[in-house]
Length: 560
Image 1: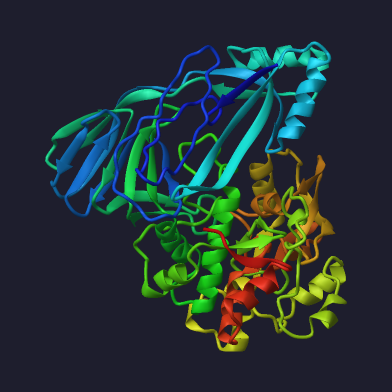
Image 2: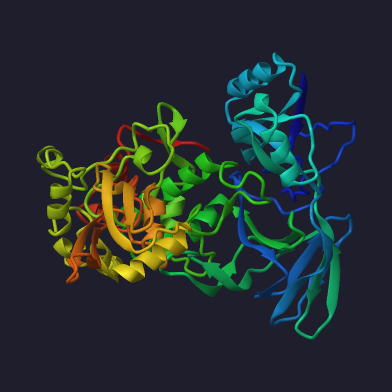
């Protein structure tokens, strides 16, 4: 049996470490006896808490940045330490580079469950098919204690292919490999040189990776909210340390390396404003910390960072919007997480549920977590509201066309300043001509359906969010699945939520001339409703009350 333990899909990434607080433990065994060591650069001591790596830029030819003070540049090689003090706008750019070498392989399973991987491995071996079990993964440390040790296991065919077409042809003509899929595997690190250009034009060239420390750094033109209504670019300020490195494509990646507390100081104002009540901010701190730990090595297992800075992971805005209330919420919840049956919870949240949260299994391919169930966002008379079945079309229409007395209806509390943005999302409308909506759907889905004739909800979740939507065209019809796919397919950017009903204005020939989408809420609706949490806090509810309401049966636990 051939078993290989690798770092991040066969790519041995050169990492930087904090002494006395090793933030990652990598198990690296080498297929043919070769050994690649992780480069280490001495750093200052840090508190006994996890170190977080946040991806800010990927795939760039150059990145403009502005250190706010004198700063140090540290390279991977021994003695590469440069003290710099020139103020103004600096630029990091690729001098020359080569992408990571790669091959194509046939993957049969990728899982966090070793037993499942071994079962698949033995199945193919019993048929005399040569396969490999590859183990990759990271451990996350707080001080000297590993608090998350997450490995993933992959079973692949023990055969490399030069290109995707070659691998696909082999798969298609080998019936015994049915169920496999072609994947691209990195076989080693990228290589190149990064040039730093000072405001006066002086240059410093460093191989592969460097880190800027001893000063906050402003990154210019950070892309925010890609694919959503608030998409834009803006300058952002980051504390901790800023790493520039050659990524697998041979381009530049920028990674902010900082402590968990400082990471949360950038997430809370990105996800809530600092003017939210303290108990709501504390709830946000706990679920953000828990979500990071739960998702560690899940969402970006093949990247040189743990999380990205956008809503795909959690919105991270750096240190520029820090405030005393943010620091207090982070400090007073330090090390606390949400658990269920003594295990870390998945703790998604959304901006505004519209009055009812959603079951996780109706939004993602989840395991149906018992604590991620949809609830009416009310503190009283919930039993009466449960009789109001929002999976039924008639009920959903009444629900959306009303303004029920729920926590996230900020108007009931006088529209406090922290919720000023929320009213337009609590109940909303989007209007399209049939031609315009048809063009959007074709553009987003790639389906050629002819003229748009109708859109019909087929199935809804417990919150009224659409799970399956039929699109009927003059030339073809098809069904959209998944609430985010539906939201993206029916808008230039993304619809606020999938909880909507469709009003249709007919033309003289009886066809639909105009579609009016009337909706409720902003976001997927799973877990905590942020506006609802703020309103609960205003009503005197504690962080414990808030989390118990949105994540049923969970406990707040000291994790590190």
